Length: 81
Image 1 (cartoon, rainbow, N blue to C red):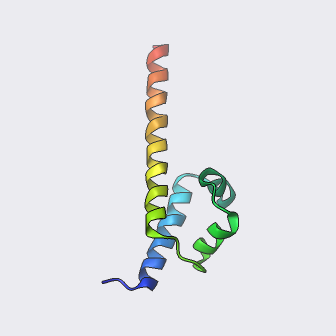
Image 2 (cartoon, one colour):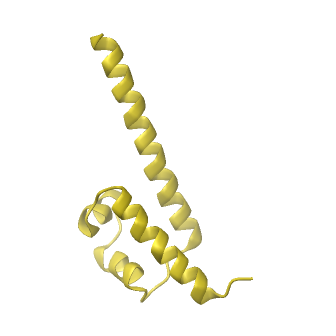
């Protein structure tokens, strides 16, 4: 079983990677998810731990938005062609 310190570090790494994969600055990421900047800063610096459920929801939202954009782009291309 993982201890809380390991989980905290893992979640921090996942959060930072998610933000970078989305190509967003910390400020843009906070605006996108409507999270206070200071909270995000504390999560990324390891001062506070992001709740597991919130990290899962953020990851899900990011993936769904990417899929939605791809589908919309495909539909737009079909209308032109």
